[in-house]
Image (cartoon, rainbow, N blue to C red; front, side, top):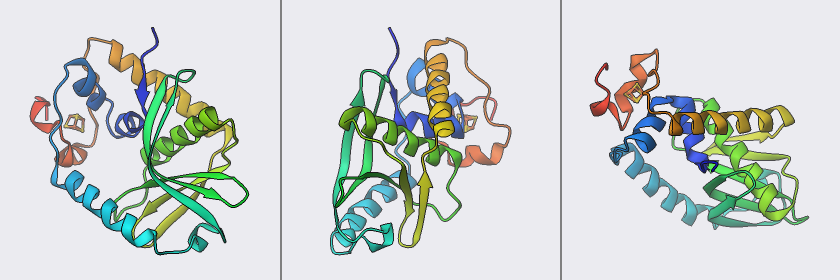
Length: 191
Ligand code: SF4
């Protein structure tokens, strides 16, 4: 049986593959960090503000927004809850991943977005050419979804499944600075 991966697992794997081991193999309940709680509040505020705005910042004159969209694909063995779906007036669908970050978006953010594009395509039988990474209030990145990115994202899904099905703890990150904000730090004995 092929294991089901969540889109958010891809971001976590890109951050540190050991987090997947803690989450699924042991499994250890993750701590709800201050950053996570603040992120949820930011999204609630954002939803209220966004509903009053036009879609011009996304390059659209008209369209609709749908928040927290649940997506699932048996064919891809992939699921996820997408922060925001924008549908343009011509029916084009754009996945939007909202992140509270003052830094540049990471590869993990990007490949999580690609997961949503793949899920949308499977669920709605459409073609998703691009999406957006959004860090409120101003940082908005229009991200193309290329064939190479799709292929690499599917490879990442397989790597996540390998960690899920393996009993061995994978190596942690090389840069210990990344561990400071990790929800699994207290279980990581070599840190
Ligand atoms: S504490 Fe560091 S090595 Fe351990 S899971 Fe977190 S990021 Fe990875």
